[in-house]
Image (tube, rainbow, N blue to C red; front, side, top):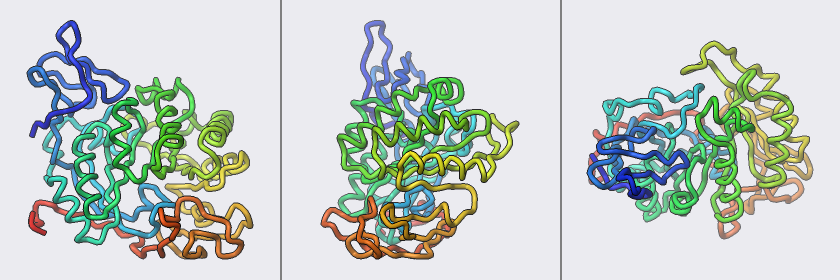
Length: 365
């Protein structure tokens, strides 16, 4: 299905320029952008994946990962196909790198996604697996439908989006996990085919101009972005530009896609990155893809007490009052209190993963 796309303009030479992401693809008749899903048809640009998905699944929200946004609750997750980055280490490459439309096996309108999320008691919907930037129109329409039912929206993204498009996109998101893939332009250029500076601009925008709760993820790749110098510089930048309360998740790499010749990241490397970030002053630093309850749990930065225990994606301890404060010293835990200052009790979804076949669910649910 072709759906009219936004964020493009006609150039003097007759080509259409896509203005959705900083790649600025220029398209002749019937050409597609690097993401493959945005295409020129006649004198307009269209999104070819609107209403079509590579799959739906109910996950724990901690898997996004988000540790400070409605903890313990289920989130309905879905993606489409394609991506506007070219990460050689992509761990969702079968979807993000796909140019085969038969990957899009399931279909659902924005309204149906919202209705199913509500019926399954999901408090939020995640636009994930591949980057939602490239299916902005579908994601935004779904977010609007969800908001009508009191369901929140979460973007799992690389943050590679133009200032014009991100204003609309994030105005409909309640939370985001932004993948900060490294901290050098060389890494972004050679490994991801993009620019670090544009991602940092998005992060500063989220911090300074929105109410979106956001957390960061950094996949540590041996010999590519794991130097202590880079980890120090990244942690310092986060501290200075985003503040101490932005959660940071360091996750371990496993060989995939076009980087199968590298070893897995050792637990010691991931834990050392966490140590560096905490020494720089960040309050909430976590590890992922390794099993370490201590480094996956949340601690009060004032008194040091554990306030949320996590064993993989299962919440094991909860020492937070109904105002989102540490039960021991009453220091607020960032991100947990809602607009009215109330902090709901955590959910108990646990670590389970529940695939959903949308075509088998009635549109009148």
